[in-house]
Length: 382
Image (tube, rainbow, N blue to C red):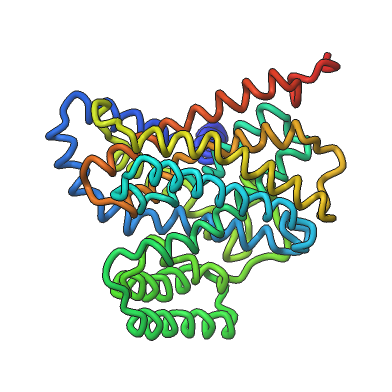
């Protein structure tokens, strides 16, 4: 009987099901009891967004690190160059489209949200791609490469362009260097438990980000590379055949379910937008995501291919278009960028609604797959 709960927990974690449950709950709550929801969300914002979300970004950093290991999806970088270029195009074009629409409409107050449509929700886009193409199609690892690169660039964008306060670079550097020095000492002393790295180095790193004026949710990102890890990559969103023995694998195994619980509360605290508050910012974010992502990814990938970069042999341009549509699912990271870009108020509500509505990218991707006859919709599929 114990195996069934473990399988259920693994299914929930692997499919990020608690996040949409939290988001839907928030939407219903915000539209039925807005005052009560507003008080709850304001009280939970700090503990969820600034503290709890460190687990989410730590998992993102862990995936990036493992993907760069030998036999990983990003090793060597020449193997992943086309996907990385596609990710850059998939960030630049939506950002440019967003800024172009904002400028054309003379909505100066919305300019700060330019990064919102650059986001790709790696978990949900992966699930859509796996359903459309099947587990073995090269489109799935290609999308994961692209989403990983998108996440990596997104972390840089968040740190550089969305400080939470006046940036204090000296305080940040001094405290962070102390944290990293301690983690280096732990690594040098062959400490093979992840707790010292996270509890000591991670806590100091959080203080560095918080007092340095940068977003403290990123605190574990510079710590994770110091945690000892195995010389292998089990595969993204794949459960290892046995409990991992390396500290980084144990770290992921330990925080996977807590991170999903945090994502539930992230959805609950951030996704509650009164439907009546949808506005022009909503549609600008949505258009930039669902139109800009496929346009940017396909254009950048095709140009890179024409210049000599390699694509997986079985990957067609029709597949690329469906991949681009799938990557328009912004959701988690888009919501996070929105909360980082705007204070509470109409602009935040509008852009958050656009991030939530980007879930329509899944429907668009499936419709594109049906129309273009790719993946499970190929004409020769029996």
